[in-house]
Image (cartoon, rainbow, N blue to C red; front, side):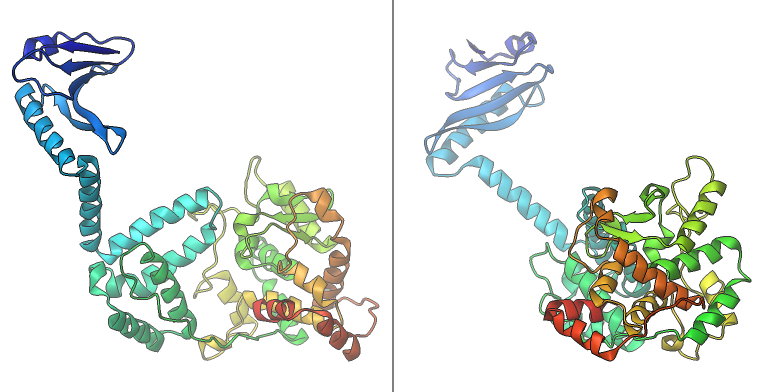
Length: 436
């Protein structure tokens, strides 16, 4: 709705609020400025704006709110805006550029600790919409707090140049390992991704020596014997790690809603999978016995199979440090060495399951599916059941051998293994051997 009025303080004060916004044009007096208007909003606010055609389009520039801005001030500003338009300047674009420059200057003065906080906030949004995994953020937080925060958190983001970035990573490598250095590089690249200059962008990861620790049958026996001295919950965790061959995080965060008791399938959602695809794990009779017992003992409404009231996540967390259940188990079993690399890790159980399965003659592609390296995305229990029985049989045979049970299994043949490897594509071979 449009109207005209002589702009006086009293006249503008008496403008009534209506059910729809309306506009009053400045006209009828010697001081009136063509294009100056007062918008009366439904909220009760009264806003001065200047309007005119610019490059063929109706363009509106907000001046300010009445009575904080007086009529005289609004007219003076309107004349300046009209002059800017005449000389090819759009005040809206000038203002937008100024805001962007202010943001840029503010970003340049930001500390690296503040940059991490901003990056963390963005990551949380990505987790919420399903683009990233919460486990990835946990790992990043650990990398930041253990290796970067104390060293560079107090610096401004512009303090890190290409040469200092290289020096920083060399210092991390000397103190830790290639793996930690690469994790720090990945995090820092991501943190600086939105900045004008990314000092880490041209730095490449170093090649890592892949860990190949596999437990022998005798070592598995010692592990199981040591396990009997732990409380039931830790026995169940380790047994499910052995019986499923899945990653530590997936087992510890296992939820009752992911278990299909009828078909004996564990459906791990996309948000927990490294490959970012849903994964169906066949559960052997031994695994189902554990879950059935835990289900009967669980509190009504409990979300996690291994809950913990002391953990921020709501489920048991394992850091493998001194005093942890894994440290106790491996210490008693004699599976801890003098150096860090000699200790048996939880992930070695997964590698052991996969390696035993292949070495005893199991199908390589089946083993790859078990580990979650397949490209098949499984979204429902019914669909998963069509492709899962063979995987269940292979897993049952392998875990039975690990647990020392006598099963009549056909002896593996080297020829069979070689043939199966030859049938794989180069990408499948790299995926199977590189990600175990």
